[in-house]
Image 1 (spheres, rainbow, N blue to C red):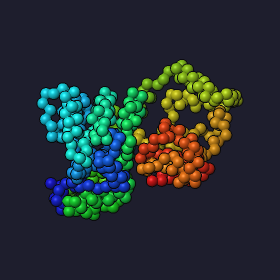
Image 2: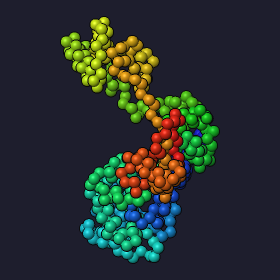
Image 3: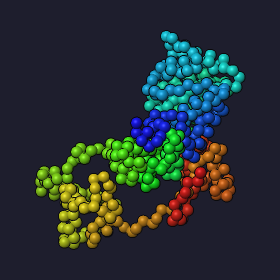
Image 4: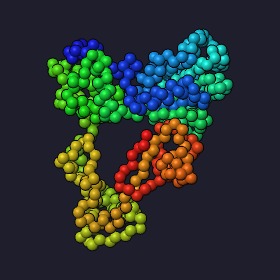
Length: 435
């Protein structure tokens, strides 16, 4: 296999989640500690772990399973598209109970007996991966299950793990009762560039190799393309090693890294053959009469958007503005010779043409730069009073802090990892996130 070519004991970059080789960045350590604490001590009944796909949520869950925490009976659900009754049929065997052909009520009663007969100091937990795909009905059934089975000292803990879309799901009005049961929320952030390099080194060293297999510039290119997502790093580094092996090279060069990244991007983007060729506009020109109608409509829209600003140019200026508008509507504006189909237009291309008085008159005075705001990341135990004392010098300024964060619906409920902003200050330097 290719890894023998580099003197490795096995493939270093696997795509399936595994706790056999575990690298923990700062965010991973925080989330793992929060997950372990919620499973063993949290009394709310629900915990929420949010992270983009590939950041390592399932890997952290596997790490908890591998630790075999004393006093914890943990059942895992990896298929969230099951009904509530099907979920119960998956959970109970993991807790040592055979389900047979029992119905929904009998399954709940069996789980009640498991919790009631547990040894002193033991807890029962259910972890559901990809929870953003759970139906509203199943989420409500899980809440009712937590109310019924975990009514005494909340001995049943439910962990919902999913993508950021899960937050949008739980913000729905009909799920507010589920949302209000969540006391712990953590966000699994991507790795930093330095952590990404350390992650690659960890994977290689676990198989008896070193990061010298990658040229330093090649590794930096792969790390940048991965954006701190461990799964992407696995895919890119694996394919880079395969490419180097196919060329009988001892190291991954920058050219190889660029080739792998370009190929990876081509998988994520639509192919060029699916895009409309630019020459087709010339094949099917817009009739002059329709062109004039569209240009007149565009000019009328610009006048309306002027919010009452009226400008009457001279006959020469009007003809020039009308001609430019007509060219924009027809799509005949010349493309930048340096541009490409994959790049966004630059700021220079978005501005008005030099001397275009009709556009300048509508722009008005230049807007003053917006005041900078410092972002604060919520830590365990933080409240608005605590933050006001820490950053504003007095807990009496908690009201100012609450006014600066209208996105917080309930000032009495803050979640770990949530972002709040200090009141605006007149500075040019951007605020930094305080962890």
